[in-house]
Length: 343
Image (cartoon, rainbow, N blue to C red; front, side):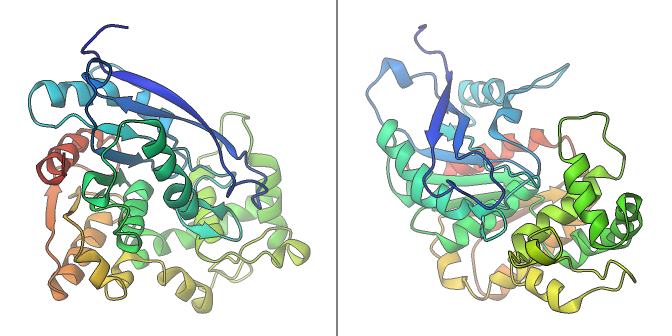
């Protein structure tokens, strides 16, 4: 092993809280951990950042690189070398589900993914790597659904994560989800009428067969979010799936009672509830592209406004770009973490 070279360490972890989860997803998870250049040539301890992935993503997606693009190791190495980032351990967990994602919350339709992060992975990392334990030396960050997870995990667990960064995190559900419901109605009917269409989609499309139809992402996104925000295990016997959809599958009308359940998970609506927790955080950094295709730049503005209303210190930025291929913003994320994390 060369000295002063960073390393990607592949962790194998057996989860107790994900064992026997409702979807039968594996409780044995592998994920990458970035160890900074001096890790094996010193005995010092390091701050930690949890970098969590967007919908349908895992930690391993961060290792991909292509023409004129860096993977996460190359990016972090460059930031450290140029002095824009402190050396730190970066953990990239796997919280994907059969339905595409967990939103990093506990759900009776998917599993206990908040508990997985907070109660299992954080202690596991502290026990197995030379970390500086404590909230002020531990950050959580991500983009899209990873940004959503960063917001909610930090505001609910400020004694675990003392720093939070979100890039285009899911917020203000009236814009980022609701606008796609009418398309879902038209697209799911290609698999059958009513509940049969949902059951047939789950049975026939959630597999490795390629190519997927253009409608796949919109359908799986609505199903995935419903499994997190409006789980209903009792539906398995009557409908064949274990969640409630926020739309009437026959008429397409919005089911306000179900969408109201979703809104209880919206970060903009959680600020008031968790305002005292949010005030404990050493860093809240929010950004989004000015032309985000899901309106998440508007969600970021509204989230920022709610924070301002309650006197919660934070940083809010917008950048040129949309929702996709915005990994370049991790430069700013880790720069901000480095300025505020205790190392």
